[in-house]
Image 1 (tube, rainbow, N blue to C red):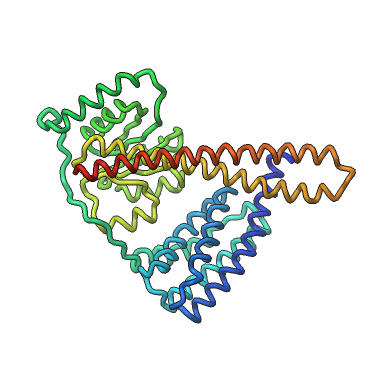
Image 2: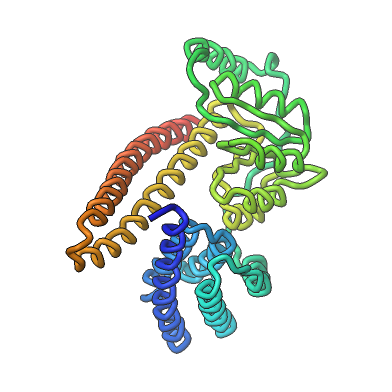
Length: 372
């Protein structure tokens, strides 16, 4: 089985499995239409939708995955009773289920078919997110970043601390590559200095359009950007970033973050934000969390692909075992299956390590919050 035939079989499996799952979601939506007060099936519904989203990402249907992500956001809000399950909203849910069925029918005919017909219903989803989803977060005060480190004793002490600790790391490999985007050159250079002292490789730009060009040509681990910029604001930049890379962590460093940005952050999958003015430790903790998020996504995608491969190969093995004349072919498929199982084992161990690292980072955050 070569790479091309494997990808075709992988997508065929996704299409057939999704077709069955959408029949089940339609039944749940119809039950909700009759009894909107009964949310007992919402957990199962969300598991199915999340499975379709994750599997779609594994087989490369990014347009479908982005669409389902917005759909999932509204379903979570309905489950948590942030928005009411009105008859209009349930009609929309059933309409979306029909559209998803159309997607699967289209992909059955042509696995590389355009899914541009999703655009109209996606606009309706965005309207619901804008008009009905009212998420509240703690309001942050807008402040200016104090650039004069020498006049700020606390920042000066932190700066010396980082400089001292970084001497031992000078020959160590880079912890990751960060892209900084801010229209204020002084702030950009200050952030660059802080992160480079903590052993990150840092690329900088004052223009959002240039940041997008860099993202297309460079392997970037984390993007750190301002919110308010003249050419293109941070939210618009984030939307463009998600068209290029769905999983890359985005961290906002800004003095203009308000509560109305919360739902936008949720929609765009923003990893974290840091309010100005900030301490160096606060910034570095946010970057560490983002890097852990990047590693986690990488391992999840790897183990998801390995699991999908395993499923396909098990199906293949089942058919081969019925034919006793194909011993050589069976041995070949068993080797491929063993490779998948080894990959799953390695990724699982890595995920456990990441979970441990995340707990250590969270412990640092809790200590800092307790001291502030």
